[in-house]
Length: 154
Image (cartoon, rainbow, N blue to C red; front, side):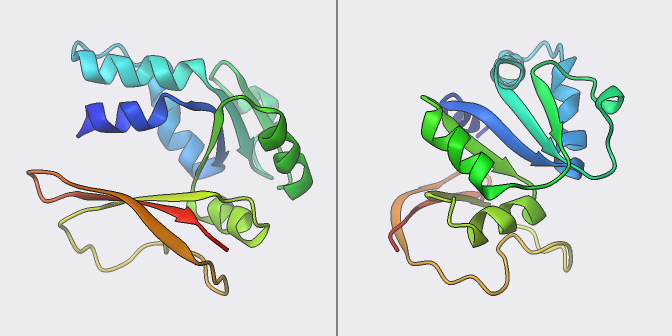
């Protein structure tokens, strides 16, 4: 499954992260795993630009290359990045993703469903947003995970 995820991530040239998601992903900066699939993901991640939206992080808190901090989410600035980029943008973190949905910046939704119920946590999709979606890809994995990709249609 991780090799599948790597192939999904290859077209991403810029990741937009909330603080917590950035802190979770930053371990890939120094990852030197002997497993080729894990090394591949680390290289993909390190090769992308990262924009971290945080009111609490300062530039000296950033320990990864190709990373900058923005203290406020500016939909027009993101729209400009999106329009000028030859590569895809990825949004990580439910709060930031909710802001992107509300601003009409999301073209595609990719979901991985896990065969586990944890009974809590932050919602993956925002309240108060209605968007029509078209299922364009699905895949089941032997371990019970499922991948769904939807295109935004309206």
